Length: 84
Ligand SMILES: [Zn+2]
Ligand SMILES: [Zn+2]
Image (cartoon, rainbow, N blue to C red):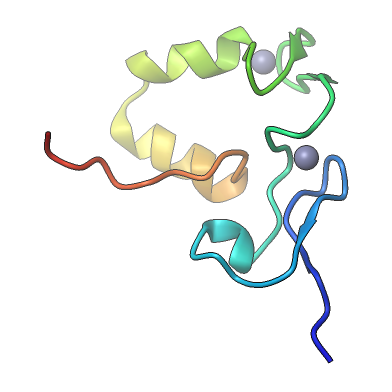
C-alpha cells in the first residue's frame, strides 16, 4: 500500500509519489502552499512569495555558508542552474 509522502512540515502537504525533488527524502520546512510564517531568525513575516531579509541576504554569503544553510534547512527545492 502506497502511503502519501510528507512534502512539507509547515502545512502538512503531501504528494502521492516521489517526484525527483529533495522532499522525496525529507519534508521541507515550508512550501509554496504554506500560509505566511514568522522567520525564526529575524522575526519578520515570511511567505513563499514575500521572503524575509534572511533570504535576500543569500547573495552576499560565502558559498560554504549557503551550503550549510541549505543542509540544515531545506526550505525550497533547489534545482541545478542550467546554462541558457
Ligand atoms: Zn507547506
Ligand atoms: Zn528571516
